[in-house]
Image (tube, rainbow, N blue to C red):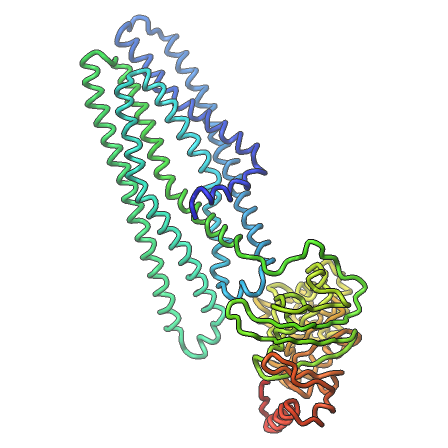
Length: 589
C-alpha cells in the first residue's frame, strides 16, 4: 500500500488524543526556539567583540546568559513532556489498534482461520504494532520540528547572505532524490522481515504444540533443521535491509560533507570580499550545523518510520480481512426459544475450493427431538451442524429456528441458545472453575458446582489437588480426555441452551470414560433439541431419528429399528461396527 493511503487509515487514531498531540507539538516548538536562539546570541557577541569590544559589559553578558539559562529550563520541561506524555500517547494508540485488531478477529469466520497461520495473526497484533508507539509519537513531532527548523533557518540565513543560502538549500532536493531509491528498498526489506517473523512464529508454534509427536518419532533434529533454515532466512532478510539502510545513511553523510565544504569555501570567499561579517559566518555555520543535524535526524528516523509504516500496513491488511458472518441490520434477538430447526433446500460449498459438501438438504427437526447423523467421513455431518450457529452461511437455501431465518437473528443471541460439545475439547489456560464458568460469565460458584454435578464431573474435580481452583495447564494438558470432556459438558450445562450439537463427543475416549460421558450427555440432552454426530453407532440407538448422510445428501432416515429393517447403508455401518467391536477394534465412521 502507498504510504499516503496508510497514513489516511492511521490518522483517525489520533482523534482521542488531539489535546495531547497539540501540547506535544507546542513543546516541540519551544525546544526548537530554544535551540535556534544560541547561534543568534553567539553572532551578537562575536560581532560586538570584533567591532566594539568596549561596549561588551559584564552586565550584558550576564543578562544574555540568564535569558539563555531560563530558555534551557523551558527546553528541559518541554522535552520531559515530549519524552513522557508523548510516548504514553503512542503506547495508547498502539493499545487501541491492538484492541481493534482483536475485536475484528472475533468477527472473522472459520474460513479465515482455516487459511491463515496463527503465528502470522499473532505477529500482526503483537510485534507488528510494537514500533507504532515510537512511530505515532515521533512521526508528527519529528516532521514538525524539521519543518520549523528548516523554515526558521532559511529565513535567518537569507538575512545573513541570500546567495550562500540558496546554494545550500539547492542541495537539499538533490539529497532527497538520491535517498528515495534506498528509502523504498528499506521499506520493502522491512515488509519481508515482518512477513517472515510471522512464518517463524508459526514454525515455533507448530513445533511446540506438537512436541509429543516430535519426540514420539524422534524427529528433534528434523525440527531443529527446519527452524535453522527459517532462522537463517530471517537473518538474510535482515542483512539485506541493513545493507540498504547503510547505503541510505551514507548518502546523507556524503551530502553532509559537501554542504560543509560549500560553507567553508563559499563563506570564506564572501568574508574575504566583505559580504559577510565574521560573527555572521559563525552563526551561519551553526545554523547549517543545526540544519544538517535536522536532516540527519529525519534520515535516521526513516528506519523507525519504515518499521512503523510496515506495522501499520500489516495491521491494515488484517483489518481489511472480510467479515463473512455478520448481523443483518434488522436482526433481532431470539426469544422464547422452543428449539425447532428446519433446513429448506440448503446447499453449501467452502469458498476456497468450491467443492459441494451439502446438496439441497431439506429437514425439519421438532422441539426436543433427538436426531443422530451418521455416514462416512467427509459426508457433510459436521458441516451441517456448523451451519446452525452460523459458523458458515449456506451457499443456497435457508436455515430457520422456530420459523425464523438464522440470518435475521442476532449472532450473540443465536449462539447463546446453542450448546456445542466437540470431540476435540478445548480448555483455556486457567483453573477448572474458570473453564466451567466460561459457559455463563458472571455465574455464581453454586451454579458452577451444580453444573459440574450434572455433568458427572464434581467428584473427580474435588479429588484434584486444589479442587475447582486446580490449574489445568495449556489446553487442559493436566487432565485426561474423559475429564476434559466432562468439564466441557459442565460448561454447556451452565449455559443451559435449548439446542444441543454433539460432534462425536465420545469418539476419542476409552470405554470407561465413554460410559461416564455418555451418561452426562443423556442428562444434558434431556428436554433439549439435540443433534448428535455419531462415531460409535451403539450410542445413538435410542435417537428419535437417525439420518444417513452420503455425498452431501440425506440417503436414509428413520429410527434404529426402521433403518435396520431396511438393510441399507445404516444396516451395513452398524453391522460392521458391531463386528469391529467384537474384535476390540472400533472402526471410525
